[in-house]
Image: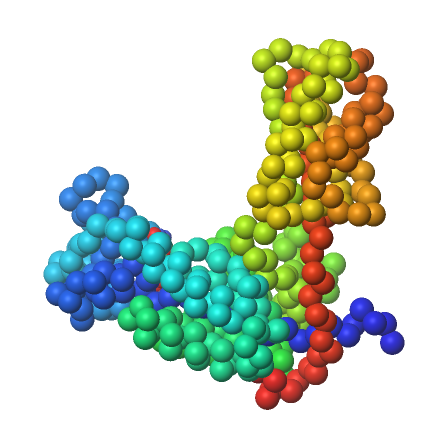
Length: 367
Ligand code: DCP
Ligand code: MG
């Protein structure tokens, strides 16, 4: 058997706060509770738009990104509130601290939304549904706000699931029901399908995942470009995109554009020393060591090249970084062209391999 196929079943949670800005306003202002609240620009001013509306206001058809003037027409009794971003940011940080009790594999998408990979949760709870319940409860207890959660084996399905029973929802779509779920899904719910693509699909008689599933990968790519490849996989319940913790740097570097173009190797080396020192400082600040050193050169005519070298041992010291950067520079025959920018970066960070547990596809109790 091809070992590549034995992938562990992941446990992914997508959390999305309910009517986030409006709920924070209703929480902090008892007068607003139970009333149609619109957070955003004022309807009197020109160009004001709705950031979000309370569920009471949504009954009148008010939606995010709608002109505030239109919102006022739809619901004249709506209360318009100016956003207080500091309050939303504070709530958002608190929510993330709750997530961190369970996992560090957190990928925030915005202030009110994040993916969590709880395949290996910190508290060994094991059940993603139970973790989602606890997170929702903690958000209620500690922030007096509600969130909706979607639980599944991949990001795509978890995100759709979190939206299915809003507000205060918890929706689980397990491995055994995922293909069925995808077959029923209307095409406009597919990632990256906007109005135009959805229109095109419908004209072609493609209304649901099941319709897309009848097409070959080649046809999907022919009709819908690169996204076709994603549609092909996702209708079969496959979405391998990892949860990528925010701020996890893929490279750390420094670069400098010079006031005049460099033509001599000794001046280039002087600049490399300064850059290597900066890179060392940044690596140490983030406690990172990298195995790949990349040199970037931009010439006076704006042509740009990069040259990289990977070494066995991850490093963060100025001497090694500088030595390799100099070797890479010399190999480019640097005095033949004028150089306006030099940069050094490190990547290939030493990173604890995630424990790869054997998966048991289809076993619901795992969640
Ligand atoms: N937001 C915004 N402008 C938009 C959309 C959203 O400023 N066009 C802000 C206000 C929202 C927050 O982002 O409160 C989160 O966006 P969501 O799309 O998650 O919307 P809500 O959380 O408000 O509502 P829902 O319960 O549908 O998630
Ligand atoms: Mg939300």
